[in-house]
Amino acid sequence: QVQLQESGPGLVKPSQTLSLTCTVSGGSVTTSYYYWNWIRQPPGKGLEWMGAIAWDGSTYYSPSLKSRTSISRDTSKNQFSLQLSSVTPEDTAVYHCARASDLRAATDERYDYWGQGTQVTVSS
Image (cartoon, rainbow, N blue to C red; front, side):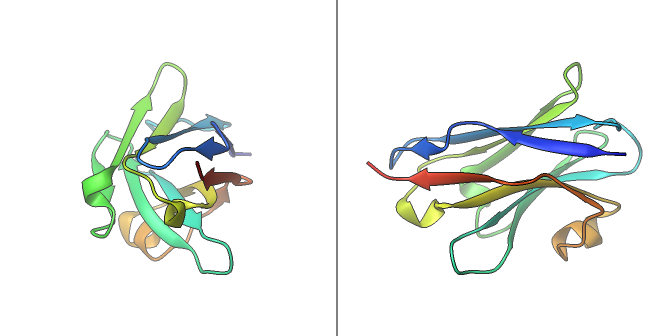
């Protein structure tokens, strides 16, 4: 029933900020006690959890990306968004949004619903 859809530019220039939005339907970003996540997969590599925003608006980030990552939400649009600053070609990946039932599941990359993913390429 829950569906998630990523949107945003597919090409970002180095040093700029990558911005993506996840639109949620069939559920609410404010429903207790879910965590709404951003995950990415570089080509030929595994999944990397980036961070999450919880039902109450609290945010959590991977230590390796915390300094560059910001996750926010717009409850009126039932959306949450990702901003990744100072991008380099190493940030090229398929970016997914997904829902997790708790924070441990989120960081363990166990999700009950996923978006289809969107390719983002960092290149000049």
